[in-house]
Image (tube, rainbow, N blue to C red; front, side, top):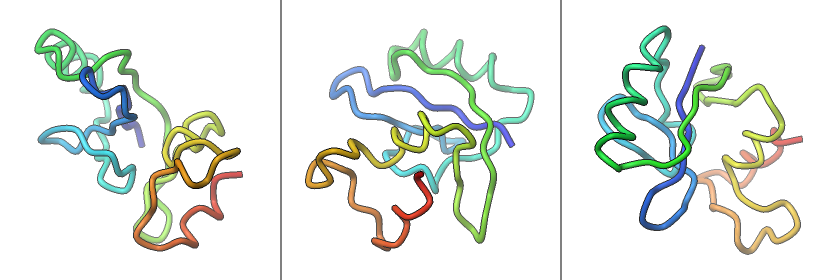
Length: 98
């Protein structure tokens, strides 16, 4: 599966394309398949997102998991300061990062 990620233009927070807009939660990301470039062009032109790009991901047990470690870390926040990380609904969700 292919998903889109980028940063919110106002806050700088990591965001994920849901099919209707951008979310802070990777689990809400949707598979864009071969539509990534078209969606990115529209969203970046509308200045809703900055530095957006497509990545490979896997859906495991209902959760979306980026395939690359860099994007796994981006999904939850800094690993050295867990107090600054995005708190998932289930704290065990952080176990998949590394």
